[in-house]
Image 1 (spheres, rainbow, N blue to C red):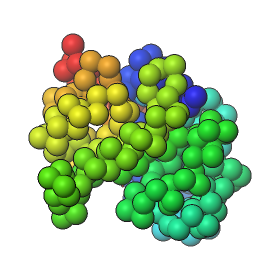
Image 2: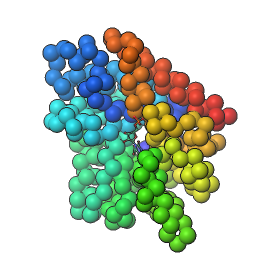
Image 3: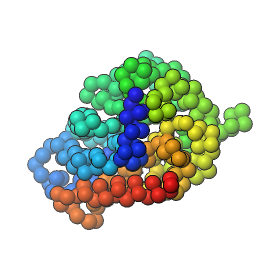
Image 4: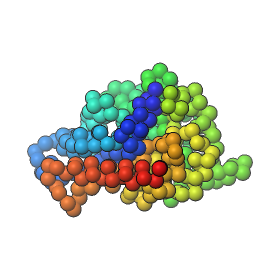
Length: 285
Ligand SMILES: O=C(O)c1cc(=O)[nH]c(=O)n1[C@@H]1O[C@H](COP(=O)(O)O)[C@@H](O)[C@H]1O
């Protein structure tokens, strides 16, 4: 199962998930000023970061809006990056946060688990309920794919709905219970399911609460670095079983900014990943 491959990476290479939220302003001048197409500039930037980090991170997350915002060329670079990660036997998470009625969800599943935009995991929004999630499960069952469902997001506004009380429980706990019920059929040898949850690394009390309630759940944890999430706090959610991957995007892919803009720019990303990994692992001892 894909979750077992991801967990193996977490144990062997560490829990860092490199966020390839690439924007043109992050790309060094020497690439940006070349005569290459936008597609090739973005891909060259991403490839350099992937080559510099593949042995020290568990996976890559691509935020699709960063590519969509650049139109067709952006999407070509998105596709090329996913294919490159696959060619290196790396693991990709497509951060697409989809949600729709099941007939449309079927097409989203086909779009992101097959063909030009094929990825290993995608992120989903649970707001529309079980039948909006079901179409993806066929891919989890038969095509070795995985999903991360939004449970408690990292942003300030996450309290607006996610913390509303339903039957004396916060709504995100109810979502967690649903994720547990959907995930139980897809548990791999690692003991984790290919259906995991997105929990922001920015809310200390919620991370403790979620770990106490859902110890065997596997988490995608964004919010380290640029959003202020600390390794110490996040270690409570990872726990002794290191049940998750910790994403940083801007913190890693802009590490060269204000420093070296030359061909070795991705070495700064590598250093950031290694530092981040050390920062997290020291709290797990
Ligand atoms: O699903 C996500 O990945 C996600 C969920 C969430 O609660 N918070 C969150 O920041 N994210 C994503 O994680 C990344 C965080 O980026 P940085 O803040 O630059 O590290 C972005 O791609 C966000 O879209």
